[in-house]
Length: 283
Image (cartoon, rainbow, N blue to C red; front, side, top):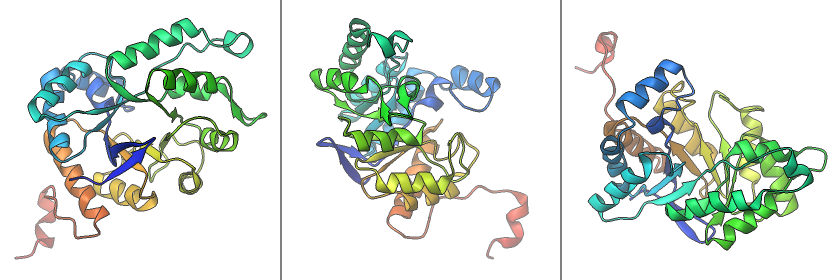
């Protein structure tokens, strides 16, 4: 079974199932988004991919569970496999100019968080659209996030911090913000990363809490072998890698590839074939 780590006392698989490639958020093009929504965004297709992960012990998923058909797909695969899926939610929060002067609209925040509880979320990490908007580089803090963490705790969920800004992790650690984990973009080509890859690697290595890395394959711009070899060797044993797939075969390939890298044994996944490879194949 896939290696595990612990976040806030909860056991998670170190590989996390990403959901962008299920819902049409390709970070590539409008045409690719449309393809995903037309061919992948379906309860049974998503459940078929989930099943490969769950049967390999990858039982942790990240994303917006309330977006159709995610909740139904999770329920279907749980019924098939007889195993619960651990849900990490990344809900959007109502960030307005009033948050800085009057504080949060706690009624609206409570409604959003209650919906996450309703959908079975175990870890709640408000989306970076809220988190990063409130990063104060002068005061070296994330404004108002202590209120959100408290409201998450009150509902029995574990609070975390989703961010695209490397400063968020540093400021949260410095201020002692009540969170148990961080989300950070991390890939070998620096895709969507705000500072150099080696700097982010150091921040992850020094973070006081486990880090969930995202976009390891740079939305398909880095091939799986290069992407997984880099990320698994650059993070710590307590950190995690979130992956996106569009088919059961892709899920199995990433699991097998990752296990071989983590266990430091030869990679045995089937390679793709083209005519130009004929001369390098052993006879």
